[in-house]
Length: 207
Image (cartoon, rainbow, N blue to C red):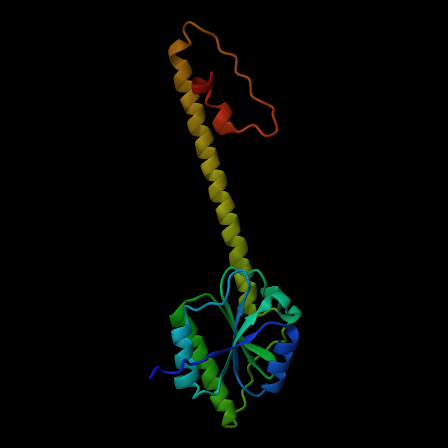
């Protein structure tokens, strides 16, 4: 007889469902996989979520898959290129994680489960938690890293463009050198708005 498939996640598709879920289960630790409809949910870490739910939390954690397209309170997570996982307790964010590094995510998830179990035992901690409209320190670091990566990509593109242009100039000079004793050259630089250097600089082929 085939084993019954374990349903790990509860799917959330709109603001009403989301608000009802976090309100009804405000005293339960929630881990939400936030995704956009064009990309779909992350399934890479599903094997880890089985351990988190059944082994580490004794089935006390709630796992959600939230399509953020139509959820205004999660607006800032739309159009993310990497998976985002959010831990929620008391209708507040306790931790946020981006990416699919299973080792790092396992460490984060285990700590969140431990905090939650301690709370069930009456231990009160003074951890800072966040409203859904607050930007977490982790997000600020992501933005800084993203801006830096964009600057680096632009710098690389500009450097390669300069290298190509320098190579073309050398090529033109090498083509002209053998004839300089007998001919004079007048070079016209095109002023067309959309002129493409890789086309108009290949004068030896096109002329």
